Image (tube, rainbow, N blue to C red; front, top):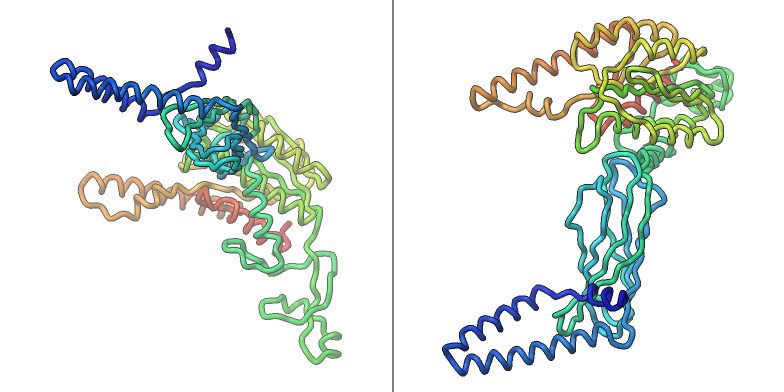
Amino acid sequence: MRGFIDHIKSIYFNTVTFWVFGIIVGLMILGAWSTIVFIVSVIAAVAFIVLLILDYILLYWRGGYIEASRSTDKVLSLGDDNPIKIEIVNGYLINIKTTVIDNLPFQLQIRDFKMEQALEGAETKILTYSVHPNTRGDYKFDDFDVFVATDLLGLLQRRFKIPQSKVIAVYPSLIHMKEIELKTLSKVALSQGVKKMRRLGHSYEFEQIKTYVQGDDYRSINWKSTGRNQTLMINQYEDEKAQPIYFAIDKGRNMRMPFNGLSLVDYAVNSTLAISNVALEKSDRVGLLTFDKDFDVFIKAQHRRGQLAMILDALYNMQQKDVDANFNALYHAVKRQVRQRSLIFLYTNCNTLHSLQRMKPVLSLMNKKHLLVTILFENSEISELASKKPKDLEEIYENTIAEKFLYEQRLIAAELNTMGVHTIVSKPEELSINTINKYLELKSQGKI
């Protein structure tokens, strides 16, 4: 009995079937006034029933079947288009039309997803689509359905339920991390945005003697080698290695602001992962600090196997709270935990001079012992509003407020620079590029 009920539940009518049925019913109603119309309606009804039976036989007779499977990466990347593949195997010997309805995770808020694909007899095809997760966490992909209709008639559909339930974690963007690694560590600097910095200072490890190129530090000219080769030669030094670098992420309410689907915290998370990978590849030591009203996560700066995985897990599990960030807690944690002078990248969102006044004492104290880089976010929508030519009184008010906001942000950056704190004001989508350029700049100048 159970099998019979499941069999009935697998049968669905196509839209065209309802239209034909409606037309036949209409003809039968009109047949009450015309014998000829009634006879035509009866013939049409019989033919329709015969076609339904024939379509049913084609769908269910001789063991016709569909096999399907869904394949994804082991983890998905936050804020990126992640490819999903569905492979469909046509077990019928006839041509069919399929409709795939995938039950996507609720976090994606997609409730009408479907893909249609025609397959020839015994053909296999792979359907590809992408998902764009905007929050970290576990995403559950439920079982999906494949509806099959014959290409010949297409009056009925047979439903195949494909058991493919799976939970996949959405981690900070590994795709973005690989892109930044490729741009930064490539030997040929063709990547747009990432600057290849020429070393300005001296480090302690000699690498080689090379031909002088305009822009090299003339203080490093090797005069003995120059005399032997009859051309200017210069000593080249390796960048210092094993330098401690910390990424401090403000998880307060100011960092909850959304931009293109991601919060500012998530942009900071993706940037931290990308630059941590680059710094580890350059043999520096990398650590992590996160805080809101309390200091909660601390990973000591180290260069060892598994360090990037530890940072990745911490970023994945990081939760935001709707509270103001406590910079005093950050300062005391840094004072207690970070004993060696380090480069600290602080991701925060300071929008007003009043907020800066509360942060200044802490930032000043941290900058005395460490090399502090404060990263602020530029609101590109406000920048566009400020540059827009106003057409009426309302737009004049909006334009004035936007310009006031941008002016105050410039004052904040100038105030921080006056304090000796390096400052980056970046659009969220350009955060990683601007931050890594700063890292390379400071490293080339021998400041870390």
